[in-house]
Amino acid sequence: MKKLIHSDHAPRALGPYSQAVQHGDLVFLSGQVGIDPATGKFIDGGVEEQTHQVIKNLTAVLEAADLDRSQILKTTIFLASMEDFQKVNAVYGEYFSDNPPARATVEVAGLPLGALVEVEAVAAK
Image 1 (cartoon, rainbow, N blue to C red):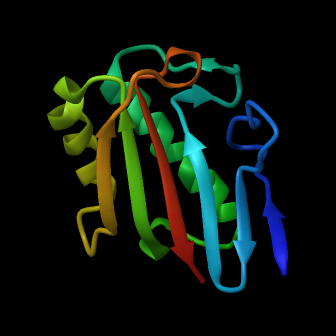
Image 2: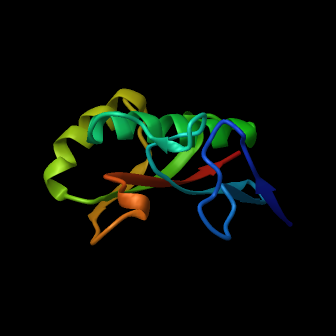
């Protein structure tokens, strides 16, 4: 059975989708961008600061599903520019140093609201 997951500690969905959906033991987290949920605006700074906020937002949604980052199986990172790969990778590594999930990283033509980075994830209970 499908269960919708929502956290007030992560930005509201920017369209007709859920922050996350649980089906059985799997939780599918929608992509998060570097928006501060308290202000509804992008965090000040560049791609590193946005990446930190993205991970905080993902963590908030995980917590709403009674999960933590260690339960993430796979992430997909979307970058506005592959030139930011090393910067994003360094920040990402701060949060996933032990037993990191599988991951794909792709450059895209554009991200919502002009974001520099977006990350989606799949986790398991």
